[in-house]
Amino acid sequence: MDDMNKITDYFGFDLGDGESAVAWMRAGKKTEPQMIELRGRKSVITALASHPEKGLFIGEEACHLPGADWLQVRFKSRYLKDPAASGSLVMMFAREVLNTLMADGRLDSPETACFFIGCPSGWPQETREAYKKLFQRAGMVNCEVVSESRAAFMFARESGELRVSDDLLTLPTLIIDAGSSTTDFTFVADLAERSLIAADFGEVSLGGGLLDRMLLERNVRRSPQRRQLEDIFERFPQYEARCEFEARRVKEMYFTQARRGSGLRAESAVKLYAGRTPVTLDITCDDYDMGDILAHHPAHRRRVPHAPH
Image (tube, rainbow, N blue to C red; front, top):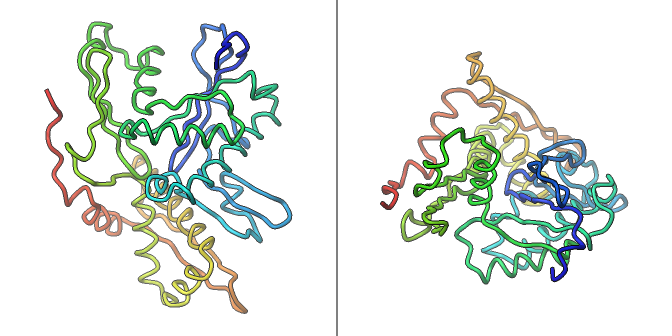
């Protein structure tokens, strides 16, 4: 934006493949950015659904929306492979976030707000420019696209969360940003960043969202109604997305129990109404399930080299 004097609010928008969040800071204030709520949550599921009468919904509301025409999740990870289709979903999701911020009174006008949008550090400049245009078309007219890993490091350093000396922070640093579908490695030295992508680590996608998908597939395979479930998923992709979301919840319950040291078994169920008789998918996860999933995770099939010196 040419005239920065018109900016009254700054927003940091982390649109993740699994979850998204927004931070806010008033222009001219020296306080650190504050996480703000979207639809009552400081972190929302990156999900988008459309209802024929009620319009668009985001977050967990989208995942549980009865009568939805379609439900889309994990669309950011598809952006590089299919920018046309996935890009429109990114734009619609961003527009709903902006509408929510305005409805909640977080900003008076997009013209007086500046948005900083995160992206993987390995994205080339051309891709970043195209990504930026999506958010501008969504209504975030004043926006910049920045590397997510570097932005996270800068916040942690300035906020004092790292609890290390200033001298140590001047040394070359490896930043690891573990996301839902990918893990981003960024090497920073002398204020210059270098993304450690295919040439260093290979074409491997590592992220917690892959566990969701593998857990869902595992439970579908052992279901006595496997063929019916596969047919429903083929005819109604929104049901498959809904079940993947539930698999994510079961995974989170499993690891929450692991931290508490309690019995390691989590379970849930999804009832799908796609015919005369509803079909129920039971989703469970225990030690054996997770151990086998992790053993077949892509991380176990590739060796990660040492970081550069």
